[in-house]
Length: 483
Ligand code: 5AD
Ligand code: SF4
Image 1 (cartoon, rainbow, N blue to C red):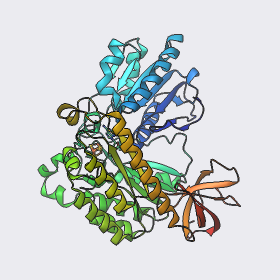
Image 2: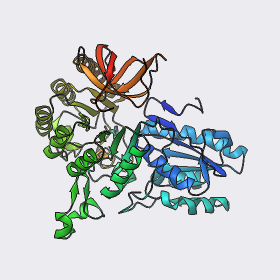
Image 3: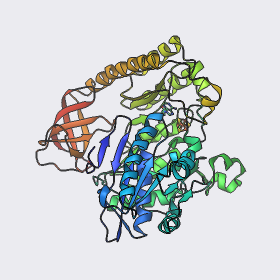
């Protein structure tokens, strides 16, 4: 594995190894695993550390501090992190000055194991405790171990300007909510990231404006459940009912926030992720339709097409309700692309349940999909109450069928663009050819085209000539009016 390449896909999740250069005296090497939220958090950590004398480095072997921002969502993600920790421990043993810290979702569950039993790290810090890092670092500098995994009711890091590390200068994340109250029975997130809370909209708009000044062209509003965003002056989402009438009347929901962002920076593209079917309102879809700079793409996980599995997952929506939502989306935004998350082999999933998943996919014809085998997570309601009783072979076979069908649908959706002109924001050089640019259209499909005189960060109209299931290929016909 290269220690230099900042962006890698490890087969399970995106991995970013961060690097910035400030005039700080100590250096920190940060590796991030898992969801976009973790990447965004690593930028918050880098910012907090840069105020405390640390510059980020991409050289593992010369760093004073090694941090790994961990993911617990599936067992495979945890195993990947564990392997890296073994490697980091070797570096730590070869140089007693080097300290290793675990951040993120594995912190709470594995703190004793890492610190006391295996003694492979010096510090364990949960997702809500990053502001405590300066104190924790002092403790480990004194040779002690340090831990803070306390989950917060109100921490949103709204007052921290993330350090954009290894950024292409074009796309950036803005975190808007933290935690999740949904309690899907399979999911560890409510336990690792705590209760849902929303960030002050003013600080979101300030971050958006700051990114604009710095030249960024596209932002993604991030949260485990963005449609559930609700600002009423601070505090947990679940305590909204206790808010005063004035607070309730002046509250800001996701539709309003999205509109504020679109209006504040009409030349920047706005994306958001992740949406949950039961929380996505028609207002949000109407706001998307109203503003050209909000991208016509919704990541709308469903997890299963079977009502009985959805119920056992505590998904709080039925198959019919989900289909109705999809119909509403296509009615209001006909060219919207939609992606899903799907889990194969949830406990007691029958062959018919699996067929229901395939038939839902046939109905929607998703543009993209993120597909997983069920992985029992310790402490979750599913792990406590349901036996992980679908054998590995069946889980894998069902997953392959889901993946194969998705590939067919992705190709079907890609082909819809042939002959059309789409607006592309150029993000990077094409992986396959240094004569081509790569970017995405509004619908989030990758588009590749000859570079000509265009540059990274340009909005370009591209006529699509051919495609694969994952990529559109075309020719630029000029700058878009957004440029
Ligand atoms: N097993 C498999 N997949 C899971 N996900 C969350 N928890 C699990 C689990 N225990 C998937 C869901 C979710 C995505 C982020 O990860 O599909 O939407
Ligand atoms: Fe997990 Fe469900 Fe919350 Fe997504 S919505 S983070 S799957 S509990």
